[in-house]
Length: 546
Image (cartoon, rainbow, N blue to C red; front, side, top):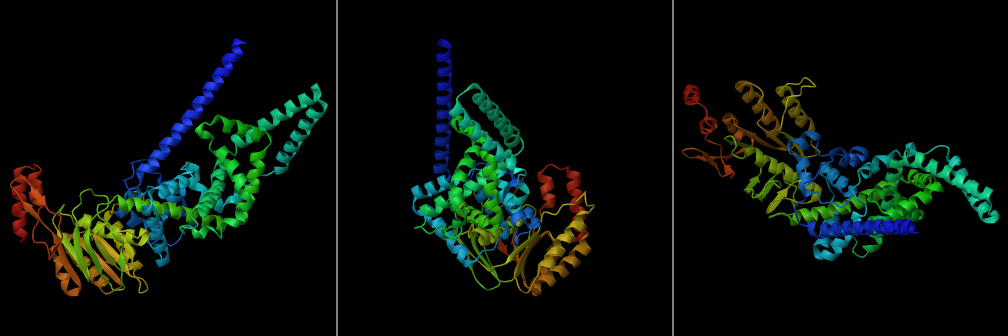
């Protein structure tokens, strides 16, 4: 008797602990949702290969190629923006930054969604709470590729599981009717067989597919909840005509999602999971839902995109609120750029700069003076303008254009390409991107630095003159003063400068008109402690070249 009481107490204690743990987890999640909006996202593991699954699977026209993406450290920019509550939001935001192209209607819808978040904190919190139900489990990132190849995940010999379910029903009825040792024994045997099939088939063989199906199907439930809750606010109207094809899926989605959430340790859900497993419910329902997805793949992916865009819009609103200075871009047909107090979104306390660029331009200046950071700032903001309708500036006017860069060139040991070969391939892809049908903004840092001075100057001038006669805005940063002579061929001159002290160099990082007239490489050697003999010899050699 005492042993039985002890067992009951232990079970009650375990149950109470599980309930309190889950409540504590939910409260932490709610607190995080309420506090994170408008703040810089916390540093966390960046699951690049997972997050880019939608982009790789669904595809679409990418305005930002991988070279440009890596040149600009756009993974870091993405992480600075990403405050999404679901895998769908993270994937769609990542794809949008690559597409970098929106219609006017898409921009207006984005602004409507952000205005909704800004107008009412409580409504915005409830929206995020609903989106967060979708979670960020690793398998959920693969839903787009899962849906596009869903027929490959069909389970064969379905009749076996159907027969096991029927057999279970028969022995249960027999046990109730006859209530003898034979009927009860048969029930126990069939129960154990079905349980074994569930464990060794569902749990060991199809567990990942069931998890993914649970989340994939649960998206429909959440999408329906969003459509009903925010119908009057008109922030997800696109869902209304898409959802009816999945009208029969709600109950199945809820039950499948219980199975997929067992990792949270809810004892009641685990018990329900095993009881359903004995009836082969998971396999049979899995196939029914899979068949619905097979018949409606395109519709499902549209729902996925709409929910993801809604989440990405909330994240964009949060990003804007976290910035010291932000604006929406103003587009114009003219081939020019106007930026007022623009800065890089990854820099805290950044120095702002302004520029009115009506021609191509070359930016010169000393080492570490700010050239590279400034041209990256322009490129990043052009991408942000056309992807999330946001610029880190006081004002920005620009034309719709494709952004392409050549900056962080590295040699490639695996392909055998030297630094210079890699660099000319990067530049050639810029020339190949030029088109009369679409304006290109090309930004080049230290053009042709991988070759000797004489040929570098000659080839650089030829390339820059070629760009000046095509449908592009070229922005080139260089140390080479000889390139400042291209002003006559349509290049404006700008520069960054510095002030020399007794023991250091002070940079103000402010853009100025005209070519640079100072150099600092030898002084930097001196300030960092190089032997005086090297400094003197360098000065003598430099004077010989003047």
